[in-house]
Length: 107
Picture 1 (cartoon, rainbow, N blue to C red):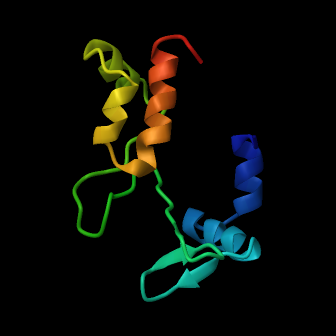
Picture 2 (picture 1 turned 90 degrees about the vertical axis):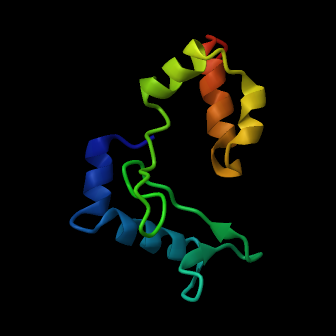
C-alpha cells in the first residue's frame, strides 16, 4: 500500500477525481458520459465512493470513513453481527462484514 507521501507524489496537483479517472482509463475502463460513470469491459458500472463526499447529487448525506472507530463502536454497542449486512447497500456489505470481524477481534 502506498504511503500518503507516495500518493501525493503520484497525484501531484490533480484532483482526486482526475487522478482516478486517468488511472481507470489507463486500465481500460470506459467513461459512459450518459450515465456519468466508468464501466468495465462487460459494461458493469465502477462506483467510486470518497469518504467525506456527498452520497449523491443534492444529497445532504456524506460518505463516512469505513475505518472510523465510530462505526465499530456502533457494531459493538448494538450487538450487530454479519447478518445486518443484508440491510445495507451491496456496495458496503463486504466492508461492513470486515468491520464486524475487527470488532470481534477475529481479523
